[in-house]
Amino acid sequence: MNNWLPFIIVVLIIVIGFVKTVATLRTTVKNENFAIEFMNNYRDFCSPLFQNTFNGDKYQWLKMKSTKMQTLMGSFGIASVYKPPGTNHYFRNYEIIINGISGIRENYSEMVNSYSLDLERRILQEVISTIDDVLLTFIGAAEGWVNEAQKEVKNPLIWLREGVRFVVTSPIFLMYWSGLVRYRMYNTLSNNYPVKLLSFLIGVIGLVSSIVTIVTGYTPFRSMIGF
Image (cartoon, rainbow, N blue to C red; front, side, top):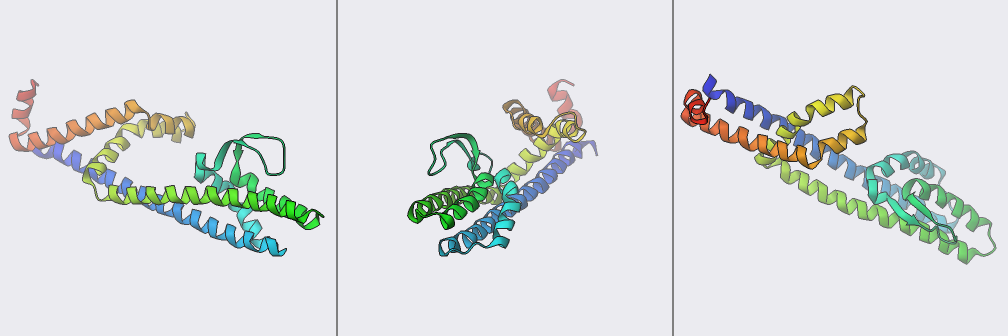
């Protein structure tokens, strides 16, 4: 039994890693599908605006989902410096989705009630195009993440890596779960270079030791390494 103990441990870690990669793939696909759904609803809402048709239900859906979309996009949805069309002021760290959806409603109202229809129409078009471009860029990135996640699900070495990382970061996760650290700190600690290096070393050592132990036996292996 002792001969197989390291092998069993490595197999359990690999199983944990496989489950983790499958969960990551499902989450990544779910996020991509939501982003596509958001963009489709966004375009369905925006297209009739220039025929003076404002779909209140679509606007409500977009407004309710805008925070989720903004959070999901992360840095893709934030402009470090942004100048709204038709204005002379700038915003820093401007959240394009959350502010943009509200801005469209305001710009539409100004277009409908303005005498300078062409100017207001151009401003509205620019706001709509900005949000559309950001959504397209993010969906393109999300598609790449899905493809990468699909490859990782088929790679046993990735299962080992993720399993070891799960074991190594478990104490950090427990600190986050208990409220001792916030998510940002948990995410930073879990993904920093020392933790990744430690996970790699443990994975390599565990894999090599399990193979050597099975081949030579547990007791001879301890004699070989001086224990």
